[in-house]
Length: 280
Image (cartoon, rainbow, N blue to C red):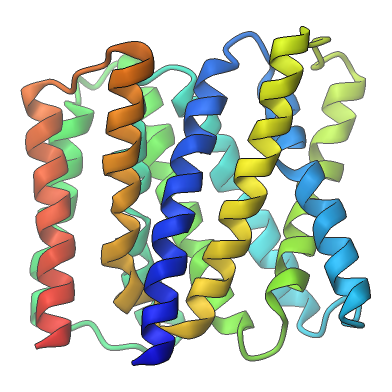
């Protein structure tokens, strides 16, 4: 129980910092996608490198294949997420991204041997019906940003599932080191080829804050999944929705429409159902 409590506190704090990160990304509307990804990760890379060296962990890690896989999945999820944030309302994007625990549920069953029960199926259906309300599909080009947000959830869920496996072989700082390094070197060529805008002083401060928020959230989240199974912590990650909705209203005066509210409530209900029956 003590370990689970630690995991809950860490995942709540992680949700707050991820909401702050998302708000910062959205506010940097004149900065290219790859530049935002680079600054999201560069600070985390140096901090993770320092921690790995200080704790005398192997720089290359132990389970290198899965460390690389986690990094690629995480980077892809971040790219989709940042793209969606630049176009969609903050709350809608974050709600769709928070479908990741349901993808964790599916992927954990497929690859980690965890069982899916009947109430899991009901929760999954409820969650994806909720996603439909938020996406409001019109089957034209306007659906693309919502699909990007949905894909960000899938790749994030995939990365979290791999993290759950990596807890057996590698330290959190090693996982973060790999992810940040792969992310930085992957976008650097695009920046050198012209996808870089010299930021103003205020934008530079926000880019540094983006890295700080993301790094803090990343370490908190990675450590949280070491203390409790992903399914037990998933309900608490929805605090990100509350934080992001408040920030969207305060900063951009965004108010979710009735369909987004209904979809968000369905997704939250699915999370509570999944958690309640798991605990009962």
